[in-house]
Length: 181
Image (cartoon, rainbow, N blue to C red):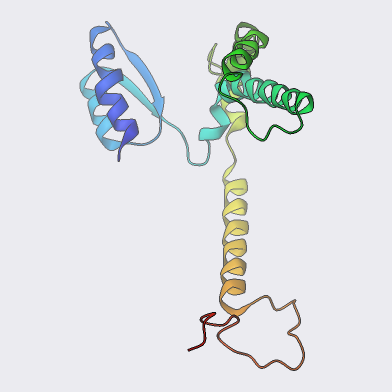
């Protein structure tokens, strides 16, 4: 499934083709999309590896505030009715309206886009957020070591845990069936 390519060819490209002059699109690597951009006078800028999350101003400028406000509302809802296990459908629209009234995207979004160097364009702000090659290599190394350790524990058991006395090693740690036979 190529959701990004579907969006590009079905939504973005038809609109971009109608706009005069050069356009810029920033995104993840897709050779098909890059070829189409060249054919349609669109500059395509790829994100460097391990950097997509470093350039998400909406996450910082909008969604983070929304999540905090929503959690606050849910906590208040739970305090009002400690027996409520779920949010009632009848109360959701009012809570959503209250949530939207507490958000001020016009205040947060410009700051987030500026912080990430996306508007106005500031190459230094963008570069500061991209992990260095050394950091990336260290993360990969740590991930490799952690994954190997997890696989070893799954296969051979945790060597730090002592085996119970008097029990023999066995492949099966639980009975195969609960019935007799």
